Length: 420
View (tube, rainbow, N blue to C red):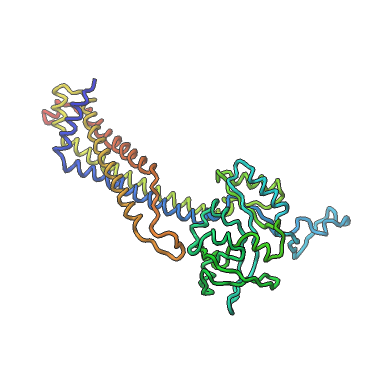
């Protein structure tokens, strides 16, 4: 039976008498774990910020009507050419309505679906923004603004004004930041919008919206759903888009295929809409974890080298221990205990240092016109990173201590005492 009190006392004595080696080994673990925590917290925080910037503004499933060429051309209907090879040049897209047929029943169906968190109707219109002599082309999006706030992070990108101000004002507009800058407008001012038919409507600016994507902010603005329906001269049932948010984003591709087949409508899932962005995020995550793991492995090799040297210096002590009745397994446990103590102390200090550096980075000012609502660098304080850090510290020090201690276990005390 192992006497752990004696084993740990001897291990403690070895660590204290070789304080320089002990501190060096512990610092290797400390800085390895500290660097891992800092790097992975910062990089994943940055990735999450970029994901939120793109993905949170994208519905999980987007329903709309797409303009596309007819799959069957008139020549195919002529019996004399049946079975022949028909070549048709300059195929034109067929006329199709922009609005979604039976949009309200579809909305009711989606809202009753247990997998759907929410479904919001939208009406998109191509218009011109008029302010004095300035005329800019763009798009106007009619929304249920409070539902948009509930289901997305649109409120985080309203730099002036509030969603409630748009809700209570049927003639209000949430103007894109790029448009506001170009036309030198702000909240309280008025802007006129003109449809492609030339009809002009005055709207009051109740807020400024900045998504961080210049291509969007330079053309897009939001109004109430009824407002854009009135501008287009359409009924309350006129809806061009339906955005669906699910409880489980991974079910979006399946849901999109189901809805497309069920309602004969174009359904675009979030994976398909952001395929290139998802690839970039995956690559960034791979790089982050590869560098982080490398830091931990380097720290593990540092511990191995120090433990190896420590055992080499303690050859005579090992021989004396064995000569006085300690078994090879007892000797191995002494050096394994030293390694685990170094790993535990160094790992805990590394977690503290990593957390401290993360807090410092979290307080550093991060100012950019593209992301006005983000004021400091993003940090991800995921507890799992700290669990992984301390676990890896213990596992790496275990293996770093096992190999040298296994060597000490097999040492012949007679040969060491004789000096051979």
